[in-house]
Length: 77
Image 1 (cartoon, helix red, strand yellow):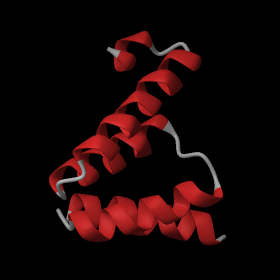
Image 2 (image 1 turned 30 degrees about the vertical axis):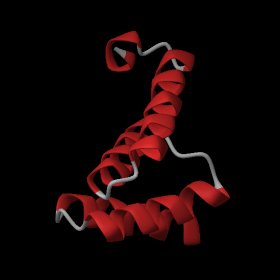
Image 3 (image 1 turned 180 degrees about the vertical axis):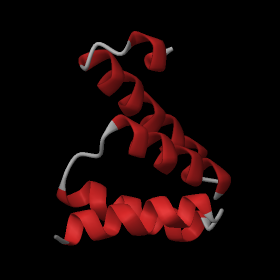
């Protein structure tokens, strides 16, 4: 599945500190299916490190809300 491949690419790029690759792959995956909050954290961090602070803040807000929606208050804080 293309979304799963993009998620793997994005997660791998993030682990390798390839912020551009992580941002591109996770953004592509997010266009096709809402990311899980853990992946939103990766995307928000990559966006921030690429100087996209406004976008990063929006993504952090999405992650926060998704954690709250799943009842994971500890991760939401």
